[in-house]
Picture 1: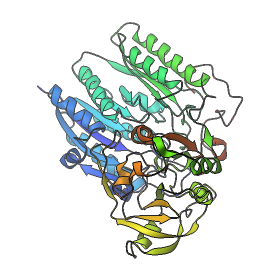
Picture 2 (picture 1 turned 180 degrees about the vertical axis):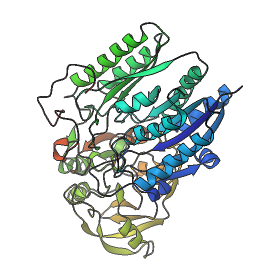
Picture 3 (picture 1 turned 90 degrees about the vertical axis):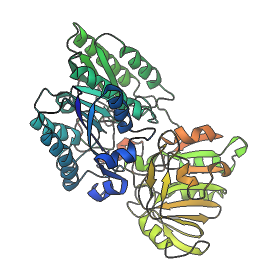
Picture 4 (picture 1 turned 30 degrees about the vertical axis):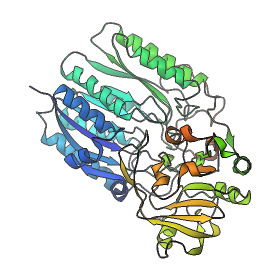
Length: 507
């Protein structure tokens, strides 16, 4: 008899310092699709968990019951209404199929905060356990930037996190988790997971897999996964934008309880990786320039080998920043930088205002800085020409978004003194060239590309860049964690408490 597996994707990370909540409308604006509609939308994409689940299900002969794919851009905590709606779809399906299910496969982020609890993933798993009991195997894929809690690892047996940042192995993680679930359902393994977590808010290089100490760590984890009894080694960089008790990096090692000595070896692996992450806490993967320094480099840059890419690390919508910081744009304009693109500027009111005009018109507007001027700068009064008006739809073709249809909502391109500014409604970090090209901004034709993104932009833009630099615009996702008013995170914790010590294990 084929195995019957229930699957779902419920994916968002939540910045508790950001005003407002992530509402049901935010999922609908991004992705909220049921069953076959979700499979049509995401099942054949190059880089989704669901695509990995489906490939494994076909190969292994499963009956896969996919319930929902729900994703929302990083923002404030998930509202009770949104959580209850999406978790309810998953739990109702588990209840309806109870007795027929052999396993459950979930694509989660690992840094979901809900308005009534700190651990959204743990809450979902707790509800599922109440329905299906303690023994049904559950496999979970996580974003590399998970705040993986102890409750989470106690409620599911199998954990597989991405090992690349930019996350170009999402489909592979889903495929691997499905295969580990299969061996469990077949009685070939008896998985369990151990967790170690150093007292840090975030792994120092944010989990970069292209440079720094984590490159060797991921390679070592892949090798450890080939050891007898070691099923998965997940290195989570943490998500410091969530002020919760268990925020921070963690190591999850899924092992086979049926193999003598596997638990001891798993504990050794988890402890060694956690200690290594701690010892590397002072290493930075980026040289964070001021906006003035970045603008001066841009003014003098020769684009002969490709455009200069400036990453505005602090105003990354992918970390829950507002995406409307103006400090970098102000500096570029003051420096006289031309033939440049600046994207995105998340300003729904201005996007709507620009759509009341026609392409080619010259307008004077107040741009950006409307959410929290104390983080990243206030509105800029600018005059410019409307180059493009659009509904914001685009289809990704790069390593991160290949094959996925996305939308910025009401969108416009405003050219100000030689800088094309992409003004959008829905927050989305810059990580695919089609996010520019679909709106008439050709990346290779620009001398400077100022992108709101931390690291994911590198997958698509670094191959064409003459040079990449990173700046801290002072926006909400600033890497200076001491600027943020933490109240709930466990203490002491580094870097808020510089004298913190760590002797191994959980914290």
